[in-house]
Structure formats: structure tokens, C-alpha cells
Length: 242
Image (cartoon, rainbow, N blue to C red; front, side):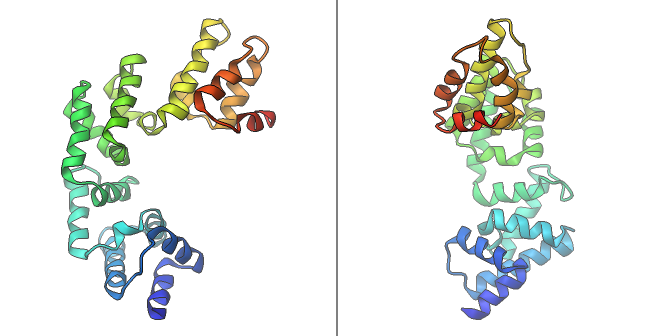
């Protein structure tokens, strides 16, 4: 086992990375898996031009994707470019690897069908896939709920969501819906008409400081509404720092 640990430490570049890797995998790594990891890294580095530090970072994010048989792994790399339309020099390339190594073609196609049922064209679907493949790891039920909220309730169009895909990545219950409720109150009271997309991108601290704290007198109960909507127990602590 010691030679394997030494081999992993050498591949990952540090003891800290080794510990992160072992915590993520929860696996006993054998010599064959170590060999696969070495071969897959060499493939990405030498044939696909990915920097070794980039490779190490993505391995730590999704280690199991890089322990598979190299022939199967190489097939995934080809599919990322051909099927997902993500070029190897794109920052999304490794996310495409994660998607295809973790989801079957049928599962991915089911998400595409959900998009089509909301009026997405093939171009819109491909654009979303190319820009943010990891979105397709969302459960089908969650996908439908987010699309229903963003498109049916808020009126966003497929072409906008395809190019502003972070909206689909945010939690509906913890971020999208609660922030929308706050903006509705501010608009109804004539206090502020703020762009929803920009509001969703703000950190929790920024959102509280910019869109809740300045209006606590003119819109009493706004913080409580937000806290109740989120079911978030530490908002008071955050808001006191603003």
C-alpha cells in the first residue's frame, strides 16, 4: 500500500492534495487504478494540452472520473468534443468529462427532453450544454421546477437562460424564490426596481447589505420574509455584519 500512497502523492503534487483525494474517493486504490490515473493524466496533459495543475484541481473535484480504464476515458474525451460540442481548450471541457463519466446518455437525453418541452430549440439546448454541461446533472424534477419558475412565472426565454445558465444552477428554494419575493416587495412599495438576474448573482452578504438593510424602516418585515422563505437560521448573524 505504501508504494501506491507514494505514487498518488507524486501524481497529486502534495500531501494535502493526497488527503483531499482519499477523503473524496472513500476507496482503497489499487495498482491498476493508480495506473489508470497516471495514463489518464498523461493523456490530458500531452495529447489534450491541459496544464498539470489544472488537471490536479479537477481530479480533486471529481476523482472517480479519472480512475476509470484509459480506453473508456479516452472515449469520453472524444464524446465531450463531438457530442457536447465543447472544445478541449474550453474551461468547460473538464466539466463535460464529469458529466459524461457520471451520467448515461439516456439520463442526459431526458434532461434535453425537459428543455424541449419548455420550448427550447436544439440550438438553445446545445448552447446550454456547451456553456454549462454540469447543469445536466440536476435531477429531472428539480430541472422542471426551476424552468417552471424562471420561464413560466418570471418570463425568461430559452436563449437568455442558455447564455445566463447560472440561474439554472442556483437553488430554487434557497436563492431564486426568496430573492424574487424580496424584489417583489421592494417594487410593490415603490422603493426599488432591481434586476432579478443581478440580484441572484450577489453573495449573501451583498444581497443583505444592498437589498434588505437600506429598506428595513420602509419595508418592515423584509428580513423576516427573506429568512422565512429560505429557512436560513444564520441570516441575522450575517445581516448584523452589514
